[in-house]
Each structure stands twice: as structure tokens, then as C-alpha cells.
Length: 405
Image (cartoon, rainbow, N blue to C red; front, side, top):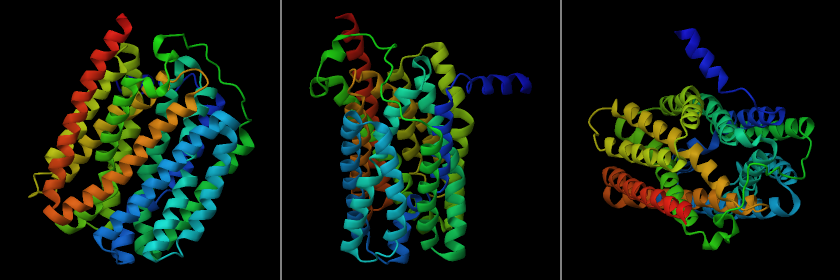
């Protein structure tokens, strides 16, 4: 029984090209070293002694830079190629990480975080386009999932190790490790992967959706709203929740890191088999995203139970399950809507929805907490998750009508 289960699990990892595995490996190295983000709000609040309002504005600058970087990354990927953008973005981000730790003023950090993220998030749409170029057409959703798996496996190790680094040598150690991981991972990529100029489109067929401009693709824009909302809910994991862990239940950085490690381990164990199963069953992507949005919303309704620390574990399990269902199929849905030769533009808008969510999530979350407390914030996040679920239902019906027309 266990042998068969293991065999089925391993089968989900077969059939990928060498370049996809290298992308996954460098993503793991980079993500394992990405320790600044999970503790950024705590660093700004507890080490630099900024107010909640100031932390919120720095996160806004962080998100605005991310939006600009996502747009530039997608635009430039279509014009000069994803390969050059990936190398420039990650290498320069590594150098920037070394420097930004020495900025400690409010306005300096607003500018520094904006510039850092404008460079760093050029990488994301370029990386999505690279998957379209290197992956076999029949494997693209699983290739996206493999890279996400590498992200989450790295994330499983990163926060717990990050908590130990903070307790041992302070927050500055995180910036050095993060910068080094960027430089090492992109150096491996440049050495082992050759640039591929053209994307293979053998799985693409002409359709009415492909002939439309992205600005006329109403289904895609509603989908972007859903992506924005689910990302806005998810980003509470890195902004308000770490502070809540400490202020309400007295958790240390290491304990918060362990909770985030639980998220990474669940993704590692369940996401690829789930994606493989859903693909074999032929379940439409939007149906899976509906369930993901609903479960993510449920996780924040659970946080309203604030008299028992164990609810943090149950909520984290729900967030993880929602993420498993929503995010890999959202990536694949966005890529599948893209017209030929405009993958960069579509994936830029998709990643920009996450960047915008980062801006709104942190600012709105901290404002609600400052004025009304944590409970109101959890209720608000849960409610917008329900709205996203209903939007997914609209998309599902719209896709049926589009296919029939």
C-alpha cells in the first residue's frame, strides 16, 4: 500500500525536461534563502521601532515597487527575452539585499524597498514565460506546480532557519543570506541553461479569446480580481499574522517560523499529487480555484476563535489547502488565456495583481488592526474571500457561454 502510494507520488515528477528541473533547483535555493519577507513586518516594528502606520506605508512602497517590476518584467520579456531579464533581476536583487540593511530611516526604507522590489519582481513574469518556453505543452501545469513546490520546500526551511538566525545574530544576517541565495541561484541558472529564443506553441489553437486584446478580455479581468483577493488574504501570513502570533499568544520568532514551515511541508507533500490527480480527472481549472478561494476564506473565519492557540495550526492547514487548490491552477489559467507572443503581458498583469494585493493587504490589514483590532481584520479578510468565490462562479458560467458561442 505504502509502496504503491510512493510510486504514484514519484510518477507525478516524471516527464520534465532538464531545464525545468534546473529552474526548480535554483528556485529552491533562492527561496530557502528568502528569509527577510516572513519577518519584515516584525523587523520594522520591533528592531527599527516604526509605528504600525509606518510599517504599513513601507509595505505599500514594497508593493508599488513589486507592481512596477512585474509590469517591466512582462513587457521586457516579450521584447528582449525572459532569459536576460531573469539574470539581471536576480543578480541585482542579491547586491541590493546587501545594501538595504544599512538603511534604517522611514523615508529611506520606503525608497529602498520600492527600488528593491522593482528589480526583484521583474523576475516573476520572466520565470513564468520561461516555463512556457522550456516545458512540454502537456506538462505546463505540472511544471508550474514543480516550481511552486520548490518555492514551498525552500519556504519550509527558510522561516525556521530565519528565526534561529534572528535569535543568534540578529535581523542583519537575513539580508546577507537572502542576497547570497539570489546570486548563487542565478549563477547556476546562467551556467547550466542556454537561452531559448522562441516559445513552442504546439498546444495552442486559435480561439475567440486569443484574438481579443487583454483589455477586452472580461473573463481575464474578473479572474485578476479573484487572484488579487486570494493573494490579499494569503499575504496576511507575512504581514499581520506574525505580529498576532506574538501579541495574542506570545509565540517566538522560531515558533512563528515553525508554523510557516508547516505550510511549506503541506505544500511539498500534497500539491503535486493533487495537481496530478486533478489533471488526470480533467477537472476544469476554475472549479478547483473556486474551492481554493472558499477554503482560504474559511481559514480566516477560524481565526475568529481566539481563545485557543491550537486554532493557529488548524487555520494554517486550511490556508495551505486553499493555496494548493487556488495558486497552481491560477498560474496555469492565466498562461492558458494568453495570446500567442503575448505571454509576458498576460503574466505581467497576473503578477501585478499579486503586487497590488501586497500593497492593499498590508495597509488595509494594519489600518483595521489599529482602529478595530485583529478580530475585525480576520472577519474582513474572510468576507472578501467569499466574494472572490462568487466571482469564480461567474467566471465558470462565462467560460461555458464563451465555449458555446
